[in-house]
Image 1 (cartoon, rainbow, N blue to C red):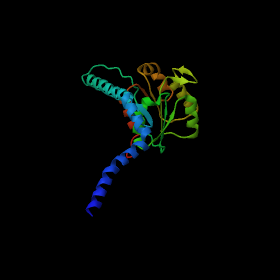
Image 2 (spheres, rainbow, N blue to C red; image 1 turned 60 degrees about the vertical axis):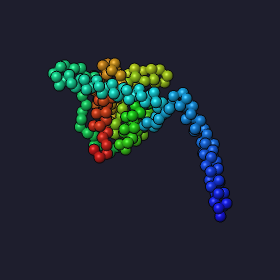
Image 3 (cartoon, rainbow, N blue to C red; image 1 turned 30 degrees about the vertical axis):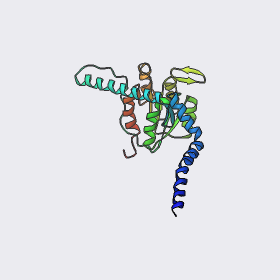
Image 4 (tube, rainbow, N blue to C red; image 1 turned 120 degrees about the vertical axis):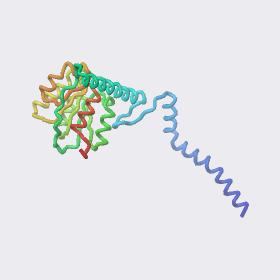
Length: 225
């Protein structure tokens, strides 16, 4: 019996390296990719269905922090009675009572919106992505959306169109489509197109991620809201 116990112990000692070797061999491609990723410092993470490098994640988070700091500074100035210039157009905060659970986001670089896309998905919304106006219009023809978000300038058919967002909004106005439309773009885009967006029936235009979060909270709140 003693010899048998020693045999089992010996087998157990040998089996662990075999098991480890089997796991490493079975997942050698994944392990190799992880090692290579670490070697090049190119770890990736999936956010909102988009694969982001750690550098891209860091850039977006730093952008959020910088914008929040800017908003807090402006709020402080306002409280102190100073005049401040706001880039965002006033948002109509009356909530829509539509039953749609889908949101359309039009942007030729959807990675830039990964954290907001993830926020909407965690709230239970299906987020459809379009990278061009024509693609967006086809999707809108097939489906009713609770909210449409768009950048302003983007590449259309190989050419950069600086007014692509307002062009899309204009097409929707022609169709009498009243879906809430929000433009998230650069500060330059806000200064240039803010009046046109509101005149065409858009809900808001902003370059501020903090403002955008507030807008999304109003127009696409959590289902408990």
